[in-house]
Image 1 (cartoon, rainbow, N blue to C red):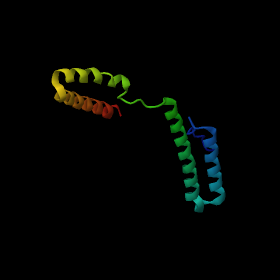
Image 2: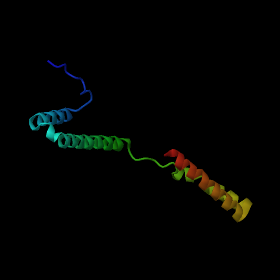
Image 3: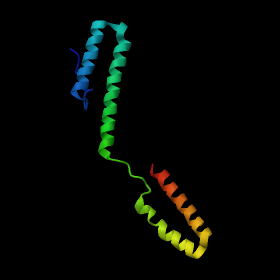
Image 4: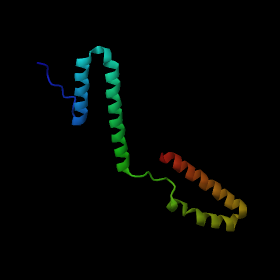
Length: 110
């Protein structure tokens, strides 16, 4: 008698049943159909993995952007002060600095 393998830890019973059915079909059909049986089983496993990944991603909720309205709120007073003291050049300098900061924050947030 062969020892029972414990490969099924964390594997759902449906997946075990599909594997058992694939192995049984292989026994009936012989090695000539191995490629088709394996490809079919792997397709079903791939769909199951995709389903689980989608479920986990849905549980996490939507991804927040690094730059939201609360971060952009600082731009208004900075641009006002830059306009008062530096004119158009001050506004341009502050706008360029804010663009650099927010682009860097967005890229590093990914």
